[in-house]
Length: 124
Image 1 (cartoon, rainbow, N blue to C red):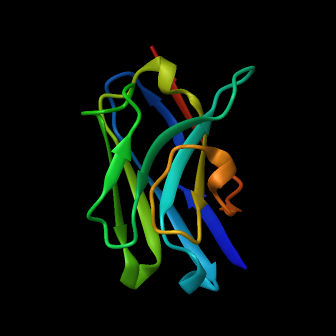
Image 2: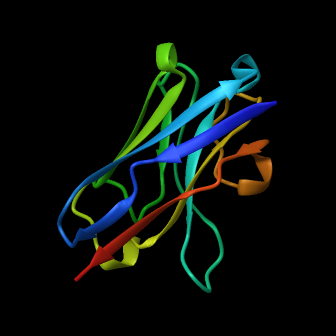
C-alpha cells in the first residue's frame, strides 16, 4: 500500500500563488506516475496535472496550462504542484493520486492510491 498526504492548501486572493505538496509513504516503489485532481462543490472530479516517475513527461489540463507546474523530488517521495495566477474558478479540494504504471494518464479511475485532499480557496 501507498499512503499519500497532501498539504499546502489555503485561502488566497486572485493572482496569488500556492505550492501544494504530496508526500508518499509505504510501498512507494509501487507508485510510479502521480497526478493532481480537483473537485469543486457540486462538480465532478477533474484532472489537473500528472507526471511520470522520472519527471520527464508532464500532462496538464488546458485550464491550468501555463499557470500550474507539476514536479517531483523522488529522494523525498514528494510531488509538488505550483499554482500561479490563481483564479476564483481554481477553488476546489485538490487530491493527489498515484498509480503503479508509469504513464501519467488523465482518468481518475486509472489511479490506484489517493490522498485525502487539501482545500484551495481563491477569493476575487
